[in-house]
Length: 139
Image (cartoon, rainbow, N blue to C red):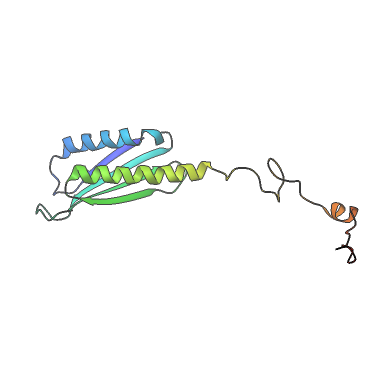
């Protein structure tokens, strides 16, 4: 899994920050390492240095092998908070997608037969047993 960290010109501590973010992402996404080819982290300070609250944005895009990329975005007061929140969201989405991709809703349908289901009926089965109507005199 390749991890790329990009920052805008308003985010300080680029080298140290990039190493710290990459380590955080790698640790949290370890479960999906075999399924993800690349992760891109984009960090930005939307207020250009002014303190206005949730002004740090973190967008993370994960590229699962053989599937469409998945992206999440969060805003927080600090870069570390926005990264932690975005990675948490990504873990949730990847877990859901991974489970959905591997889960085939249990056993086979009753219409197709196979394990857990009845064999499909043929015209011979339907015609073999005559249909009996209930006797109206029986109560």
